Image (cartoon, rainbow, N blue to C red; front, side, top):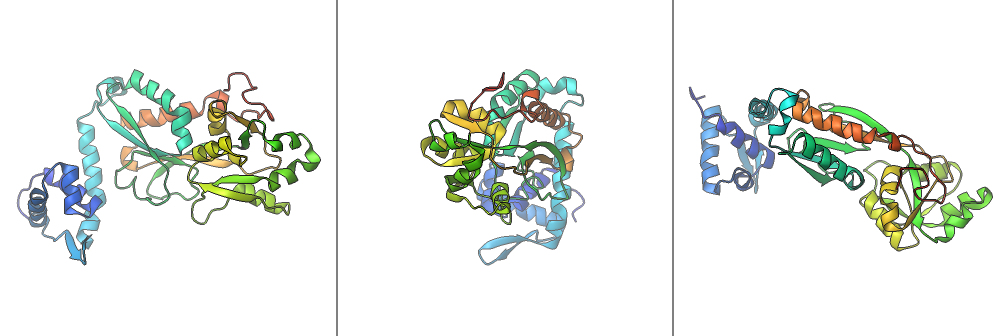
Length: 322
C-alpha cells in the first residue's frame, strides 16, 4: 500500500462497492465516468488490490473489497458525525435527509405529524419515505436508508430492531356494501365475509395471510380477486368496488373518511401483525438518528392508536378518531 492516500478515496470506494458500477458511482459522486475510472485506479494502488474485476459485462468485488465494505461505511458514518453537533440541544443546526422505508400507510397516517415534529426540532433536516419492498434486504447495511419499518418477521442479525406495536387487522368496505348488513348477524356474518370478493396485499415470499390462516382453521376459504402491493392500494380498490379489504387498523382509520369507507371488526379472530423498526448499529449513538427513532416511537405510541376499539360498521365513532 502507498505510504499516504487521500481519505476522500473512501467515499469513492463506498460508492463503487455499493453500485458495482463505475458509471453509477460517478453519478453518485457527481463526477465524469473517466474521472471515476481514474479514482478507481488510485484506489487500487492505495489498497494494493484490484477491488473490482470484470465478470462478463459486470464488475464484481474481490474478497479484499468485500472485507473493506462494512468498515468503510462505518468510518464514513463516524466521519459524518464529527461534522454534527455533539448534543441533542444543537439539533436545530443539522442539515440532513433521513430516508425511511416503510409501508405506505405509515407515510399517509403519520407523515404530516412527523414532518411537523421535524420542523420544530430539526428545521434544516428533511424526511424522505420510500415504499416497502421485499427485494432489497441490504439497504440498511449499505447505508441507502436510515430506518426500515414494517411487519417483517425475519430480522437481519446485523441490525438493531425494536417492536413498535402489534397491528390489529380490521375490515374495510365502501359505504352501502351489502356485506355490512349481514355482519350484524353472527350466524351468517362469517360465511358471508368468506364468500365476498376480497382485495389482498401481496405477502412476502414464504409468508401467508393471517386472515386466510384463520379462515382455513374454520374450514373456510375466501376469494382474493385482486392482489396489490400495499395497504393503501387495497383501501383505494375497496373504495371503488365491491371488494373487501382486511388491513391494519391504523391505516384503515386514517384513510376511511376521505375514501368513503366503513371500517368494521373482522368476524373472526386473526393474529395481529407486528410493526417493527430497524436500523444499522452505526447509527445507534447518533443524536439526530436517535431523535428520529424516539419521534417515530412517540407518534405510534399515541394513546389514540393503542389497541383502539373497533366500532362495527361505524367510522370514527370513538372520540378523537377520524
